[in-house]
Length: 95
Image (cartoon, rainbow, N blue to C red; front, side):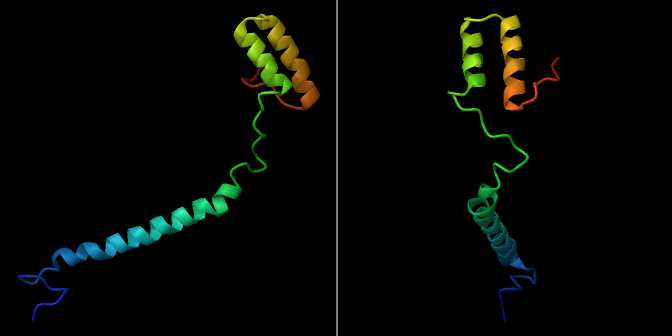
């Protein structure tokens, strides 16, 4: 008698692939569920600084430097003042 576990000459046959596929779907579904619920809430956790908006003084200063309105020395001087005021540290291990 041929059953699902014994195919042809006694080997497991193509049904052996059924159970790993089921487990992969279960694990993938669990990860997808966690990503949509739990992990999304922690994406901006306490260890990350909030993103700088386009209207913040640091972003405006960056836009002015990028457009050539101010030179590099003035940019760094003003950025250090803004970092002290807003409590941010200079990126790149600065002065």
